[in-house]
Each structure stands twice: as C-alpha cells, then as structure tokens.
Length: 521
Ligand code: LMR
Ligand code: MG
Image (cartoon, rainbow, N blue to C red; front, top):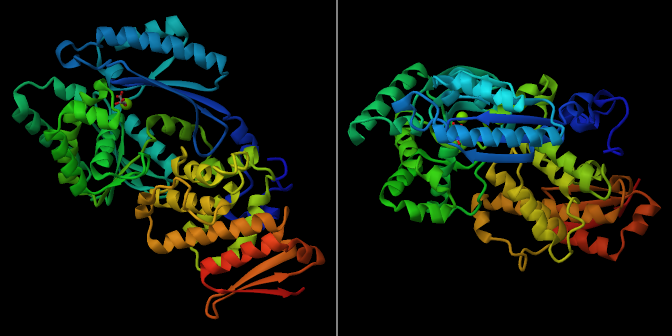
C-alpha cells in the first residue's frame, strides 16, 4: 500500500494508465470502509457488511434468513405471522452486529412484502422501536434500479436486461451501456405470490404468460443478454451446472443458453425434488420456490429471446453499495482494484506487480485492452500466496483466482488467470490437483498463452528482487521466432544466475522460440 502510492497522483505517473492510483488510498474510498446493507425481502432478510473500501465488494459479513414475510399474502393481505417473528429476531441480531462492527452507513430497505401488506407500516414501526433501524420501503421500479446498479458493480458497462426475482415480485431493468439504467418495470411474478393463484397449473400458466407478455411489450427492444438476479434464479442455475457437469462452481458470471435453460427446466420437472436438493445443496425452503420460478423463466426466455443468459450474484445490496460510490470510484476496474488490494495486503514486495507487468508486457504485443487487464491482474497477484506451503503454492494460486469472490471476470478469464498464477510457481500442471475439465472453459491458444505468462512471471519474479527492467529487458521477435534478453548492467549479469537462466530457457521453450541473451546498454 505504502510503497505503491506515487506522490502527486496519476497525472504525474502515466504508467498507471487508465487505472489511476490505488483506490483504497483515496479519501473517498476510506470513507466507505464499512458499509452495511439490510435487505428485507419477501423471502429472505439479509444483512451484508461490505468491507475494505474496495471497488470490488468484499463481504466482511453476510447472513441470510429465509423468513418468508410474503408467504400467504394473497389470502391474508398481511405479512406472514411466523415470518414477522423470525424477521424481527433477525433484525435485532443484525442491528447488534452492525453496531459492534462500527458500520457506517447502515442502510435498511424493504421490498414487496412490507410494501404491500396492510401491516407493513406497523411492522416497520415495531422494528424501529426495537432496534432503532429506519427501514426505507422502496417501490418496484426503485428495486429494479438498485438491482441494475448491483449488476454494474460487477460488470462495469454491462448491456442488456436485468431480471430480479424475489419472493413476491419480479423486476426488469434495462442496462444501456456506459453505466446507464434505462426502462424499468415491476410485476407480481414472485413465486410466493404465484403460489396463491387458484385454478391449478392452467390458470398459473395463463397468468404468467399474460404478465410476461405485458412486460415484453414494454421492453420492445430485444436484448442480447439477460442478467438473472435473485436466489431463486441462482438455485435454477445451480441445477443447470449440475446437469451439464460444469467444472466451476462459481455462480457469478455463469452463462447459459436459452436452449440449455429450457432443457434444465424440463429436467427439473421430471426430477425428484430431494434428488435436486441433495445434488446442489439447496435448502428445502428455497427448493419449494423453484418450480414456480422455473415456470416464469421458461416463459421469459421464450418471449424475450435473449441470445445469452448470465447469472449475477450482485443485486440490490450491491446496488446500494454502488450508490454510495462517487462517479470516479464507479469507473474503476473492480478486478484491478481487488488485485491491488490483495497485493498491498499480502505480497512480499507491494509495488513489484507493476514492475513485473512492465517486464513481461513485451511478450504480448498483440494483447488487446481486455487481455492487458488480465495480465496486469496476474502480475499484481503473482506473489500474494507466497506464505502457502511450497508444495501447494501452485494450487493455492489457481484456486485463489478461479474461486475468488471477485467481480469483473468471465469464467474463462478466471481460468486464464488461475493458470497463469499456477505456472508462476510450477512449470508442470501434473501433480497439482488441477482439474483438467476446467480447460474446457478456455480455448487452447489461451491456455498456452496463460502458461507463457506464468513462466514469464516465474522468470521475472526471481531474476531481480526489485525492478527487473532496470537490469534486463525482453524483446520478442515473433517473425524470427526469437526471445531476446538484453542484460543492461553488471548487476543484471550477476543476477542472471543458473536458475534464472533455466527459467528464461523454459519461457522460450513454452513460446517455441529461440532463447538469446545479449549484453547491451
Ligand atoms: C426476496 O424477495 O426475498 C428476494 O429478493 C431474495 C430471495 O431470497 O429470493
Ligand atoms: Mg428482493
């Protein structure tokens, strides 16, 4: 942290490029060090405490209780009696925890159940008396806006349609690119509400079709991508993963095709609920909602005809965090910021990642901005696992990258980053417990490139303890199939010892080029 901050800000330090100086050093970020969010939904009541003033949300605390406040609303028009007791208990606990964790600000919002129930206002009042919490009741379009903002937190510049399913409602919001939220709409297509519909399957289907039809008319513009937000969608996505034998268990950024979803919904229809639960670890309370949610999703996919469907683990809660951020903070890259934060906290030599990036960059002359960003992230993270046991370091690195609770990365990018970091410690994947099925997520050429990056970092990180480019620079002549290392200084020639030579050769071998060492200015 300390070592990395150049005085005078990014203007004087062009090598920071579009990333600016590390966020967590800035006063605006510091003031967001511990934001608490309580989401009182129709299904669940949840508190999240975000930590670390990071552009990528770090979950300092995260607890959810499926209270079912909206259960039975269709019959009674009131909050569920048992749900109210459970929610009150949860909120009392959360208020105590937030207090102890010195959370500021602490925001509490309530959605459809509290909004619509005749005793919603009385419940808010009771919560205020018992805990001091001021609950803000938001309407459907506000809910939609916050969910869309949550998606933006993980995918800066995302475009498409967000669909957030809760217990009692389902919201849609358009993301127009450039961080703009467009049209929004709310419907009563939440599974708890749908359970109250009488007249059997036929009536239910007709209702869903009519409602989705109405929504689809509002969103006439066809969206390429549908982002799914909400616990019930996530439960379906988990079943989709299981059915496909998908090798990564990360739901955030998980992509599905329309046909894949329709197949999964069919599969849900003919598979025993207990089997589905056991294979995906879904709670009984959640699984009860899945058939209704699946029915909605089927109609949505058919009517909206997106090309691709992606899961976002970020929703309304992350949207509230996003709302606290300044414009400058929002523009930051969540992956790079998280990698920097990690480097500052865990690397032996914070600041070396940036130097290493400069050293290895010449090997990737054709890399576009999205690739350069991954290379940069890899360099920042190249040493954060140094405390792990040497026999496991490569695996720890791989797991850290592929399973990290990070936004701003596709699954293919996770595997690329993980492979690069694995090869930073080990030239060979054999004996690392690496699951080869993960390679299916990445094209062959990318696998090779990640290996090359790993070996380049492996060489650069051991060649010199600080600023490798001061002592030697790499030039890659792709046409002549040569990798040239120019040693500039006597120190550089001393540093280029036997192990460094072996690693340089291993790098050239991975690139399938000739390794050449020259002395030069
Ligand atoms: C809700 O309405 O409770 C949802 O936002 C979240 C959930 O758990 O389905
Ligand atoms: Mg909700």
